[in-house]
Amino acid sequence: MANRPRIVLLGRQGSGKGTQSARLAAHLGVPHVSTGDLFRTAVRDGTALGRRVGDILDDGGLVPDDMVIEVVREHAARRGLDAGGYVLDGFPRTVVQAEAYFGTDAALTQAGHRPDVAVELDVPAELVLARLAARRVCPVDGWTTTVEDPTVEAVRCPDGHLAVQRPDDTPEAIGRRLALYEVETGPLGPWFAAHGLLARVDGTGDPDVVFQRILDELEPFLDRSPATTG
Ligand code: AMP
Image (cartoon, rainbow, N blue to C red):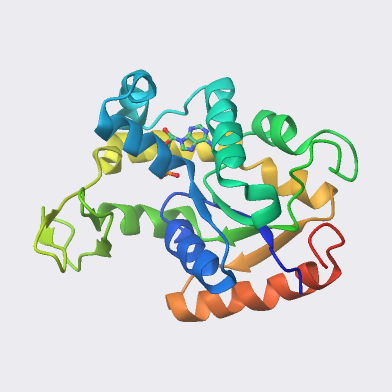
């Protein structure tokens, strides 16, 4: 198996992408990179980047490609992601981002960031709507849960902080994010497939079962990877 796998996780908002990415990164011993988390941290810390992207995040829009690419390149260089492997969660979200970061050559070796595989978590739009409405997140430590009754506004995380709805989990913002996903991110499935790097996984059902499906689908890609073996 590839020593330091490089994996991209694709999937609609609410597909379980964040949970499965974190779990996969821990399982493989590689960094988990969530661009959503990077932006939310910048907003919380009130940095220049945070001030530029705060409203975009709250409205459920997409951060402009050039800003996203700059943030990811800088983060990748600082954390040595290419040598150390990665699970990318929420990046790329457009074909422009994918081409800027991974390259436009057929083998995707030019830019030096070639992934071993892109996993697409398949969950129907109707199902993710319900999941997002029921999601509660702790603003302090990122702890996430799904409440049985979506009218419940807040629950407490194990450390006792109030876990609330994300500002972009309102019905309006959810609608915008899902529509953007279809138009902007959907084409990435065929894009990775054209490079022979797409694994599609059924993301419905028990999270443990989904995780096992991901591991099963990954195996052949990681076994054959020339970029990260050795
Ligand atoms: P996420 O946690 O992945 O759902 O991301 C939260 C928000 O961050 C998104 O709704 C976007 O506003 C922004 N964002 C995260 N990643 C990207 C990206 N690759 N391109 C553009 N916007 C992004």
